[in-house]
Image (cartoon, rainbow, N blue to C red; front, side, top):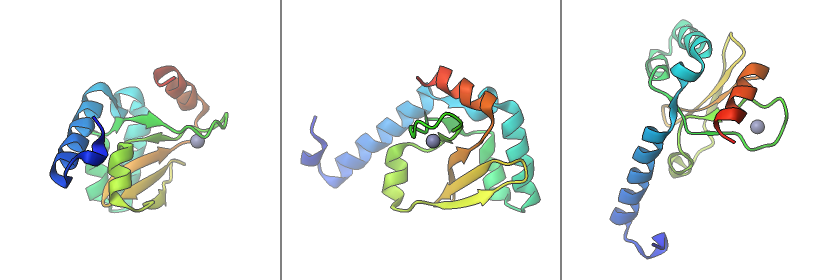
Length: 127
Ligand SMILES: [Zn+2]
């Protein structure tokens, strides 16, 4: 099905379906990286970003960064579609634990870590 022949409403619908599918097949950050999730949660609370902290436990890893750098432990928690739809690169927040979260339209879209263990785990999970 070629999406360019779809109306705006159908296009929206297929995007939503893709997003739901991603949520089902993808993995919870708190299950994959419990320590990281806990640290991010606490750091965000400390920064009085309760709105973001509340999202942490429900975040899914939908993809890892494809930059190819050996030490890169960056992963995405919003689908490519959601990020593109937002039309913004988002805002980075550096946390005390060393992770950097990127927020797009009020949602955590990306988490950057430089943890070598996390990097390895990500590569195994998402080849
Ligand atoms: Zn990368």
